[in-house]
Amino acid sequence: MKLKKVIVSVLLISSMAFVGCVSKEKPVDKTDGIKNEESIENSQEKEKSEGESALNYEISKEVLEIENKNTKIFYPQVEGYTGELLMDYMNQSLIKIAEIYGNEDPYTDVEIDYEITKMDENILSVVFIGTGKVVDFGEIKIKQSINLDMASSSNEITYDNFIKSDEDSKKKVMEILNEKAKAIGLDAGVEAEGIRIYFKGEEVVFYYMPLDDSAKEFIELSVPLKEIEDYTNTEFGEAPAS
Image 1 (tube, rainbow, N blue to C red):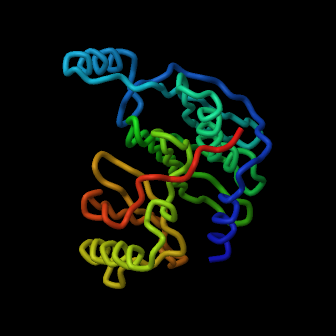
Image 2: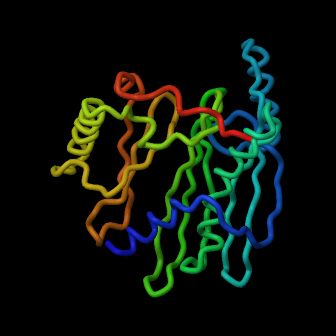
């Protein structure tokens, strides 16, 4: 339990020194995952044929490698977004996972890759999945997500600002999550210190590590956006000031 609290507190750090060897791969276009060059071209042709407008940004795949820690972490960066300052804030958010697990002393032998689960004009949702080791503890499973408001603010979308702040909305969402948890055999419902989210298609996925210290796997509860739209926000604050 103490370890989980330490990890949660570490994740709240927003600025850290960034060291290591970073390289860049080819940018990817609109996708539910990383596409190769041929699939990108096919996707672009399909969009043109369907009369869809192209996104005003792309994603490049970069990697942080730290040899003396046996660490390799892939992370995305936004390119071509209208508004250089907002794009810079987005990229600060997207590089955060690499900074934490790459540079923080407790972590070694880290391997993390990511999946883009939603990428459109409103939301960019990225899920980081991997493993690592913590000094004096052993191997851990890593699962983190970064969701960005691409429509206006560039701010991160989290469980706390996605769900409306009034008590009724919080209660209704938790009732829905408890029903989903019981439907997959969790008789006690949701038991978690913190809940995180990511977006996938027309659904939002709520995930958490159970309170039980012996738990090794994250619990995921997928909910259609329409089912909770009355209890969620569509605006996520003002754009950061220069």
